[in-house]
Image 1 (cartoon, helix red, strand yellow):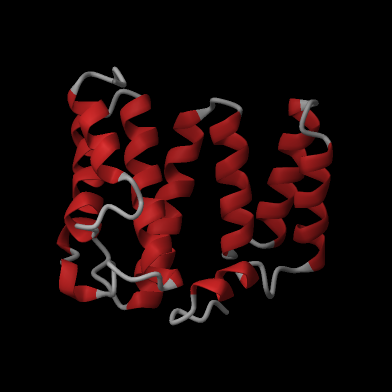
Image 2 (cartoon, rainbow, N blue to C red):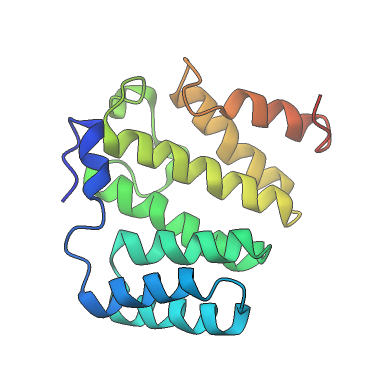
Length: 165
């Protein structure tokens, strides 16, 4: 379990991952250049640990880096929901308010929520769901006024139609 009071404990986010899922994620990384084999390993990891953060993050990263962004969207949203549930936040990310968690600190779970919501917004915008994606990134900027996770820059890029400075 992640200790939400210490960012360094985020390094243990894979604790409790069943060995078959851990092995499948390692095999996916080893087979990275063979997309079909890597995907088969990712699907094995998800089947072995469908409710474990490490399996979902591993799958998200696979689909994200293979530029299969539509498949990454529900995985990012699952991570948002996972973090929200552990923080006692509203199930709908739109209802989350800055005072609901220590978003401006370095605590693991609030930052995970912010990073996952930013990822969700990013992949949505890349798939063409601009309004929803922008809303998610704007929510991150609202919750993180110190911009520790870089949502303000991403929001500006979205507002410029995807053109970076």
